[in-house]
Length: 268
Image (cartoon, rainbow, N blue to C red):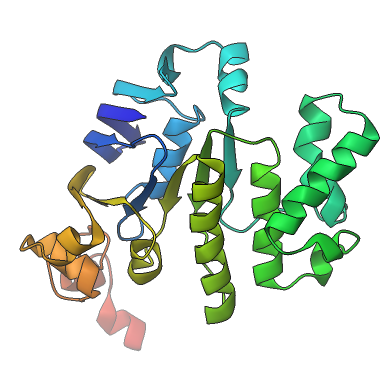
């Protein structure tokens, strides 16, 4: 999987300005960075939901930008996605949530479908929860059901969009282990988008750090921790001080308060 010199904007805001990264087959690759640096947008590029203004996006040997709709849908069937908040279908129970992609894309006999779904639920430790509704699940359980749904079609690529958000330490530890175990057992390629340095760093074979529309650094967790690059050190150490600003670009604050305001009149 390769992204080369990708450029993408939303309105006047440039999200990517020459983004380059490579994901090795069979690896767990982390994509990290502060909020607003385009991590989720990168996933949309990889799945063909949006197209770059320039550059190339190659997934499983195919140029995503050049694919027609049927070809793009066929490519997506080779990929699984764990959405940021699980995105379970609230009117379906756990079993039917996991079965949904299979029912939509295949015509498997019901006994075969049932065995397949139960196998995936067993893999995430929730076979006994098959009849529960999404509102009956804890946050960690819902995330694991969503993971079972993501792997039910045996994808070649598995994408995780912020898989640790909102999880307690125990649930987070379970999800971290599941990502590693599933990657090793199924031989798939995993992309984990996250800003949780410790958790994703413990399982990633290689990590990229996004900032300023580019991948400003790449390497193992140890290499990123040892980096002398200010932006890398700021993110890895969770420091408020550094080149990555907390504030969205804006005009001078004091001038903005004074412009167009009749303070004397307002105080009368």
